[in-house]
Image (cartoon, rainbow, N blue to C red; front, top):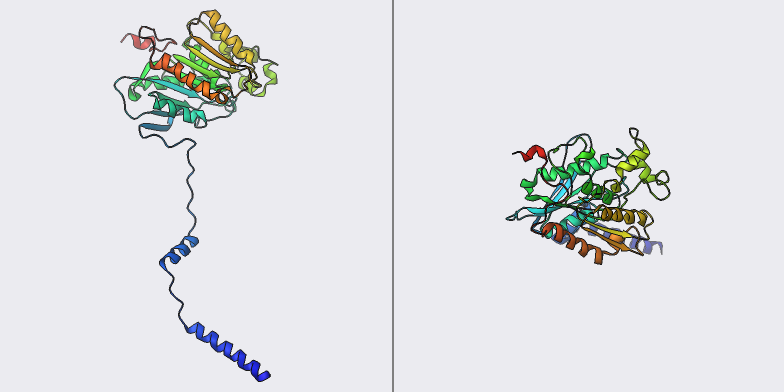
Length: 343
């Protein structure tokens, strides 16, 4: 029995030795490729944009500096038709929301909106501005004003009609866009940015979920963290700055066309803000004010009811910017200032 086991072990040893001497079959090219791919580090997958691929007939320029200086926020994105066109085009500025303390020009509708309107023939910019963490009001307004002046200063380069510039904003962006339609250089809120020979006023304004009156803010601005942070300045008293920052403080018969969307169930910006603002504009004699008040809508009124709000905004800008009445005088102080009028 012991001899039998020894023969088996010897046979296994010889079999193993023979197998060792036989060369290993060559791997196929496909097998080698798979093996090489496993050994190589994986390639990083690029992060896709939050919009569909840009149509070939459009061009986009990102992170253009509309002024130089110490803030990294002084940048805008520009989207326009690649074809220059025979006549200057109308333009739209998009100003993001975020409670004056967050948000970005390249997110959501403030990224996709300029693309959609550029498809319709507009030149569009989406802007960033100093947030309340960096500087309180009026820094944010001064920045978006500078962006509008930049656009007018470069009107020839981008084939923009300086007398046909509109704006859209939601929430904090709506607040700033409304001020762009109402606050002229006489209010001393232009800031120290360049292009001071240009007007920063808009010719048309579309807004949604709009803060308009900080003096009469429901519950008081001291109890609303984002508003208090916006207006908490070392240089100016809270009450004085509340008046200065309120669009309702500047209503007049010279206001440009306004389209306002507001949800009556808004739990962030009370509907009374839009109600009183629209009433004040009409009482002042402003001639082109449209108010769409949604009884059951919240702060997301513009996107929730997009089947109605998007087409109405498009029709509004088409009427007042793309195809304005031939004899209508441009509103909103879009003309060059007196310093260039003499020429």
